[in-house]
Amino acid sequence: MASRHSLIYGVILLIIASASWGAMFPVAAEIFKVMNPYYFTLLRYLPVALILSLLLLYKEGASAFKTEGHTFMIWFFGSMGFTVYNLLMFIGQDQLGDPGVLIASIMEAAVPIISAIVIWAYYRSRPSNFTLGTILIAFFGVTLVVTNGDFSTLFSGDRLLPLFFLFLAALGWALYTIGGSRLPKWSVLRYSTLSIIYGMATTFIVVMVGTFFGKITPPTLPEIYSVKYELLFMIFLPGLFALIGWNKGVQILTPINAVLFINFAPVTTIIIRMFQGHAIEIVELLGVVIVCGMIIANNLHNRFQQKRRFPKKKCAEINVDNAINAEVSTAEATDHSTTECNVAEEGLTAR
Image (cartoon, rainbow, N blue to C red; front, side, top):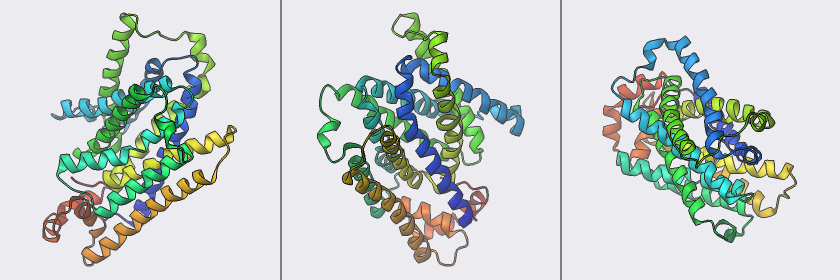
């Protein structure tokens, strides 16, 4: 059974991962002064892929690199997470210029809404009205944080195409987030490693084709060296640690709950901008309170539903989470209780 400590552990992982992703937007803005988003993505994630591959080989052996008939699925979700998300998110940010730092953050916060819709359509499992409400209100809070109440800043100027790129990027990450739940018997490390290998293979092909036709310019060694510290940060914190931590947190809390924590990303962006000289206004503080309040409210709601609907089940904490999100009946959840408990012992959630 998933203990309270494991749930807290999952929450901490998701907060740190999301906060590090919020920090990556201001850092990426500095990198884009000397390097385009295409080669930035390659230089950021190729080392991560190598490190994860070595870890997987050491912990699980060479057999863990086998896809076991899931090659297309791993490639698809990997490409969504490491090609569509990374390339389009940072291309959109770069094209928007300095305002793109904040706008990319707000699109990152759109992932919960997009994920809820994707999960609803894919699994035919409608989230509870309360969860949908907290996601929408949290998104509104994030919007207040990054716009300071002036919503026109999101769409002013020639921003439609970059914003469309950012939307597609958010959709890509929403799809990647639910990918791990398709392989409940796989470890977090295995899913993370194989998805990044296949995803970066797609990214590599895209970048090399663009370079061959003269559409993408590779950076010089002096240019790479000039942003070495920024690249090291992007590789190890938002890249390596956040990737593993996010996937583990998703498996503990399930996708529909985990994606709510992505709202910490734009909040972190605002905090960094504050240290860079951006003044924090009352509206922005209100947005922070709304975001944190909705995360707490959704957690309390799930706890109440667990006690109300499955008071005698030892693994109710896991069962009811799926039951609430999927809107299944109590009888259906009970029929699957044994499977859910076995999976829960490993900190996973079966779909």
